[in-house]
Image (cartoon, rainbow, N blue to C red; front, side):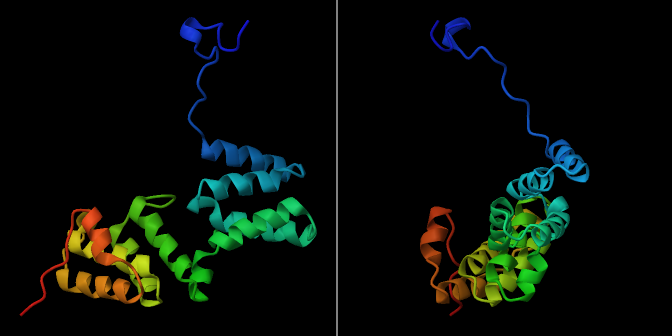
Length: 191
């Protein structure tokens, strides 16, 4: 019998997967970790990391540090350490304190979209502004657009928006091209 021919119309004979359950997955791996399963800690850390779970970030980074100290040559642990370090996962404030513009911009995106945290445009703008002032061109552009459009309840502030857009341009970002693709334009300069 040909694959998939057991269901009407040749459709797959199995039911679709249910929606992922981050909490249940992390908790199952953490239980395995507490029970001593070697794959337990890397499992829940990996699930939390790839889901970009802000709720688990600090605990994941801390547990990974413990596992790394106990297994400094374990390739899987080293790989996870690289993932977390590259993205600043579990350490956004520390990485931002050390001057990583990307680490400053990442919480902006998280707060702007509600990914792993409660959506909050004002907090997102604060993080984007910090990253912009430290030299992150796209963060400057994003802060400018948020202020230009009054994103998610922010007050429209065309003057401040223009300052961010100018900064983005100085940092090499194609502001006018990006605005055009969004159907937006900069304010006219005062005469």
